[in-house]
Image (cartoon, rainbow, N blue to C red; front, side, top):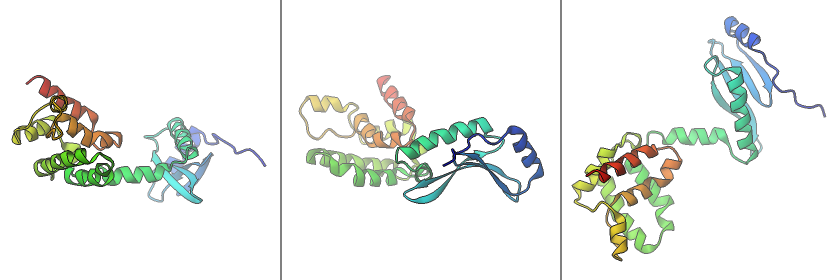
Length: 208
């Protein structure tokens, strides 16, 4: 079997096709394809197979994404595919959750995380979740700022540091930055809320 040709395209070809503005699709090898729509939009698409089906992942538009950058991105995504991941599905999932409200985030936490915790923790966190939902439920997760977290804790006249209750042997730790951070722990990994906002909130408390 002949080896798959890689890095087939050249910048001079891309510039010519972009000027011509004719619909086409040209392979650079390894699934990376330069496409031009009938409307004159040039894009990079990575084609691969996942669970037996053909999948397409748009990497970006040309010339914003150069030939060299597209090749680098394609190589990284191919590694993900080899690891059993589906980059296109992950991109769709991230996009669908980008505009989540805090209420939707709380619902997701209740379903995905809360049942895995100890019973006493479920009770304590359950109360905390209700407070968070009441205070910030309608807010967009991506728009929550440090001041919002501080205001929520002050609104319910609760303690600042969960460790103080834990050291005293109390099961009901009340709402604190640590439990709020626990709520957002998995979400930070999903990039639904920038970690710096939680850190900023913690920093505010340190200076009160």
